[in-house]
Length: 561
Image (cartoon, rainbow, N blue to C red; front, side):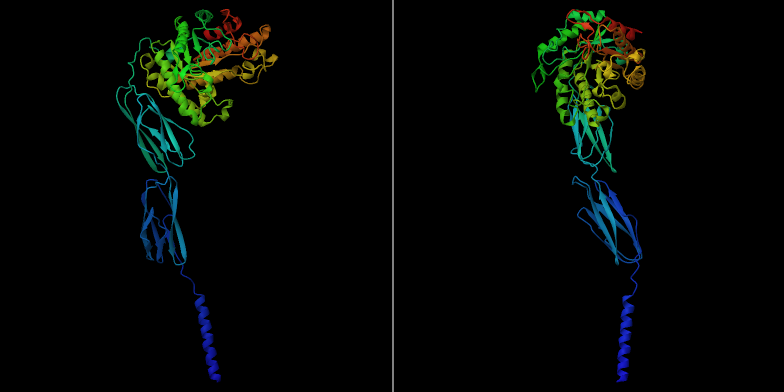
């Protein structure tokens, strides 16, 4: 009995010891080496590889219908190359997948990222012979690099934060033959090229008669200009803003005062079209504007004809949602205007717009890349519409504007439009700085000689020297002359000699600074004959005489010195 119990306990003890020894057996140490843990592949799909080296057998899982792998297992002690095949991504969105490599009790991952880089709706676009803006539906999450092999295709950039279209402005094809150009998009390792085909436009033959001066030459011929403000740009008729009808006698007074050029702000749509959809301008209005142009060129003066405020359809809508409609009207109107005035020689210039801006927003820091891009598309549409009319318009000097005709935005933001002829574009800016002197009546004096009377701290003499000098360096020195389309100062008094003298000093200094830096100044005159706000008048239009001789004398000193 004792022997049996001893044997039993001996067996039990051995069993327990053996069991404990088995539970504490050390697991297999996995030594896994994978060549990469992330695979980035482009939208169009790609076959890629990675290697697995492991000391024990392993298996791969996690494949999908668009992400396959082979082999899906490997033997320990060998290095295996895994081939991963990724299908093209047509989903319209980024996608990813995780491949799992398992060995013993360990699991490793390889992440497959397929970025939705580039998908276009089509790769060939047919462009109207007269030019147009083409929107390419580009499905991507990111901003591509865009390159073009043709200078007649202009990319209109803007910040893309989601799947949007990309816009291109195509100028009229006046070459006489069909042409093809390409644009390439590159993003996240992939590239797509699209093509534009454009038949030649049926353009009247170009006529260089009387059009020999390029932009720099013509700007050099002009001395100083005057604005026929608050007349033809009124939507309620030429006299709606309290000025009389323009006459030859008025223009004669302007010329006798020393001006050799007239800027004619003009309304073409608001009240002056027969039909809003076709934008057909009333023949009677075209004829009336022609009369005023003839008053100027008939006296051997230069004339600038523009599209001014027009009730705001153009001027206050530099947004993507309004871009197409505004450019439609811009094109239809300018093609009619250019057709009608085609036979005038180089003394007639066209200016595409006026002060395009978001209504009420004048702070440059609030201007967006969208606003800039859309406003510049208006410039391009203007160029396209005029050139397609042929004749002398094939050579006519055209004036485009910076955003809100702001000089600082011209320096820092402006991209000039593409033209089919070299050196026939001028730039227009306006400047009423400092506004609290020239526009408001917060200050009634300007300039260091009048500092004791109280002058604004901003925009004194050195400001104009620096600003206009920068404009000269960037534009004039590179072949683009500048039209200072509007400048001036309200009349603060007709009796206080110091105020009269300070205003004259301002007009002389600004005019001289402009001329010294290659700019053509056009002083603003709205016919206001009083004192205070909106009283810019220099010529008494009803009496047909000079109203403010000290101001005009100052302008002429600045212009001719």
